[in-house]
Image 1 (cartoon, rainbow, N blue to C red):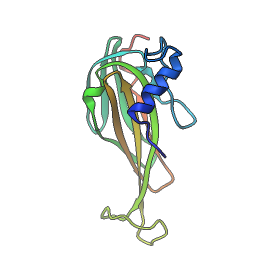
Image 2: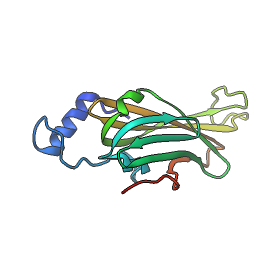
Image 3: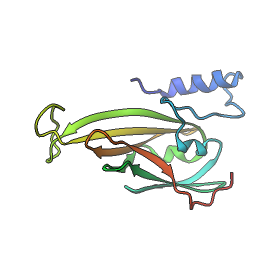
Image 4: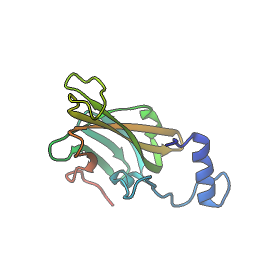
Length: 164
């Protein structure tokens, strides 16, 4: 799977607006898989700060804070591993995109093994969420560990007071 380059993003925004180099009046969130990500709530909001722990991401926006948790399905564990360019999130969010990451089978010591190997007992998946602003792109990395049947997702924490 190819990643969206900065040039591709600029061309996407120009094509979407029909106005050449200007950004579209109503940017839309896109996602490469079948359903939209809950991070799409960021689109059109101005982010003033961003923080990330293994459990929670918080975006301080002009409409109030948006807080998300890494959610593991039954019998699995999810966590946020990090973000590659957090300064790029500051500003008006134009597009949010989810990109499928990697799947790696490991043994109990964390060593990569073949799925059919006897000692393969854990599947680690990586999920990437890209947030685009005029300043660039920040990729948020979420991980999930399971027996291979379960997965993870990013879920909005409902107690966050958000003006819609």
